Amino acid sequence: MARRLVVALLRPVAWTPSGIDPVDWRTALAEDVVDLLATLNEVETAVAVTAADRWLADAVVWPGTTVYEIPQPTLDAALTTCGRATGPGRPAKADRDGAGRGYDQVAVVAGDAPDMPGLTVGKLLRPLTTRPMAVAPAAGAGPGLLGVAARLPLPAWLPALDLDQAVPAAVRAAAPRPGDLAVTPAWHRLRGPADLARLVPALAGWDATRTLLADAGILR
Image (cartoon, rainbow, N blue to C red; front, side, top):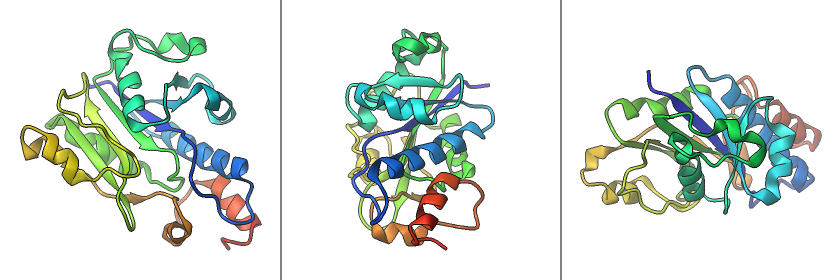
């Protein structure tokens, strides 16, 4: 069976709801995404942060979770750094046991999608049995991705990807064949006020974000 690594990219957020402390908001989003990944079966999980944001990783990770320190809080940096776990690996100094685990696949998901279902991550990984790469778009107006998954080593044709600006069509255009890229179901991220209406209160989990929104009178 393929060895799979799923990584939450915990980067600064561009928007915080009115009445909520930005640090509390960012921490809640990260906590819920990390908790979701911890429930997944047949994968190993990690987080990726810059050195300046190591405090956030330390606040939300489960014991034993690998923390990868990346040079910039970007999708490209997370894919490249975490993809090296096939060989020399670049986890943070305190987590060097993550090196050389020999992963066959890596997925990186946004850290601002607190109510993301585990099935969405599973569908992002599933196409890698027959294709080298898959992307999940971010639902809602505008461009952006929810996550990216790839076989390792990373495809040589992989273009530079911006989590907030990339679109599947541009990724597909870079591939040698259109069929090399799978586009999986979209899910929303919390990037602005309109995204709050897309949250699904009936879904279990995302307790930290749910509590903050309820306390601020935004979610009932």
